[in-house]
Length: 272
Image (cartoon, rainbow, N blue to C red; front, side, top):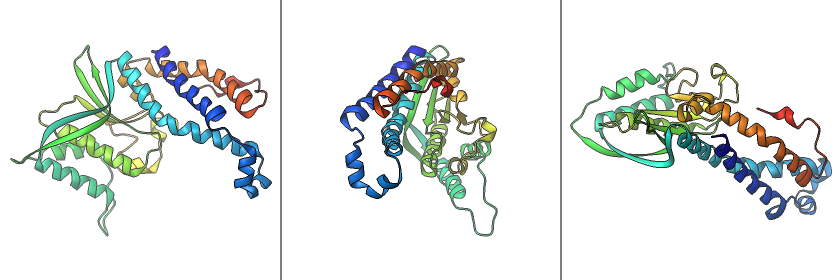
């Protein structure tokens, strides 16, 4: 698994290096011509760093999904992204889904703001009954199968600091998956690849917390909870080890080839 993870990261990093060194390098003269005031006040190296950052951060969103598929294939047995699941949901359950989302988004005037509560929300939806059946299709960010235990999972995989609209859409999709009769997955989750706040109890990004209780909802997986769910015990450690092994190599290249300076002697200090 570690080798497969490294392959994905190396491919992304090699593309980034190709872009910043050859296809779209930082050109000091161009920077000074476009932003003469900035260039007069701030060292070029600052903007050179931001030039690299923009070309690094954008492709990383896609890398998380690729890494999740690697973990699923190596761990559970099968994984793919963008998988469509079509099922039947009765109209009252769909109405209740929208009711819950509306209540979370717009609190009634003069009333206390409603907080998310996954267990009670799902129970309320599943109690809904109607003779009107509506076909519903949900496209999962990540779909995985535990081939050994015959279990199927769906994951809405978002960046560690997702916005509110993304999270609302994810919650609606997960609720629809659980509302299908018959249900096509054993479990569905809202997942973040890592926790920038450290422990789960400290997660404090406000936008997703409008839709999920990020500290307590069982439908939420953050960091190692997600990686070990999709890849099995030890997946998160394999991920950490894989990144640490190749991190120093790319840092050295960035210092020498992009920044044009000698790297410091403490390259290992940034290890995960």
